[in-house]
Length: 593
Image (cartoon, rainbow, N blue to C red; front, side, top):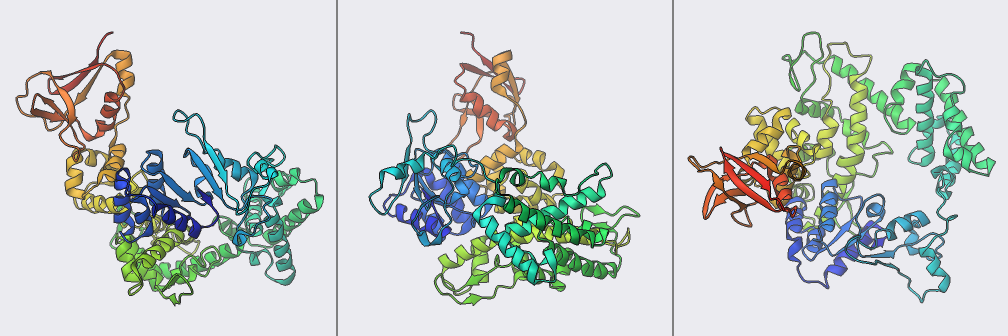
């Protein structure tokens, strides 16, 4: 069901779940979410009955788990904002659109209308290829539908015509507000913030900077702007003329700016006003950094090379930023403002102060979300505390704050105020905040397909104590084998699936069988003196996913973790196979027909 707001997505899923019994197929997902979000979180209550909701204020790993569960038929219903219809390939049998659509005269609590193309994206999910011959599309109405409203579900070519984002009603309204701001503010384009007009101004600045610093470019600096889709699509020259006048105003301010400053401001990805503020903050921090005493010659990733700057470890960088109240200053930027806010109850609640710097430390230290919710909001009902913790982690840590922190550290570390050997802040600081971990090992896992923050944190800490370098994690984990993952890291079924994919050695056993009729796989846990001969492959129990090689009732060896998924694919291929133990290896051949 496609709905208009995040709150409606949650309430719709809860309402559907009330009419259903528990769904055993969804147990793995609900257990994972209970560990990740806390058992009191409403999403856990929904998923136990095969229902979920999906919106932009949920953490990325949770959204990915929900999408995978829907693909695997663990869920039977999902309520979502347009986050699930924009580019996510999740076919279902029935799509219900319960949202305001283009041309709709209903208010729907001031919801933004789904455009015709967004509507087509949503209804295009109906019908699963290879499963059903048809799909159902339902557009809800609080009154008997009029015949012409059925045309809404089949927009014509003109309605589906791609329109530049600069020519929408919302964009032109933002442009008008920007024009008013420029007439009133002496600060010029630096006063624009938090709108498509501010984004356009930052884009123009980037184009101008690229033109100014690329020797092979000549001609009109605004040529790329004049070639934009919007400038050539509109038949109304007044609209494009207004955007070009804004671009010319940006060009005036760019020409009046010191070239070094203009270059640094173009690198942040923020509005120009925020870029200027970030750069000023970066220069303040660089002066403080230049005054720091020399370290012990150890950089964040090992001994510092003579003549090269020392890079501070995560802990020292975080302490430095906290000491100088950097996070508090970042929270005032338009791109970040409002992403860190707590109240003591859902309706008309009083704002609760949760110190951001302390919260960042708690987050990257690996504290679970339930523990964070209790620490940040003591005395607040558990369900509401969890929902707020999740929302602020998603909007603050995972998106806005990590982004601007990364931009700031880049400006600091490249400041002309620092000597070549002066210390630098940890270059991965933004990624640690983004993922909520404090070791490079955990960061490697979370950027390589592992979705569980808890698992990455646990493995990262253990690998670091055993002197396993981040580059050797894949091999180190593969050598641990699947049963050790459950024992050492308390990995659940969902997490084991991720680990199997992570350690997988690239191969295609089915293809090898089709071409050569034979594959050879090394074994682990081989019983000494095991005799060659025919064997079977299987799991000893449903709880233990490890594949064992046996003969009769005797276990002789096991399939290594890095070949586990490929062997499963081979067994599921439908080919007529025979398996032999030969010289301590598994030899599988395809029978001749």
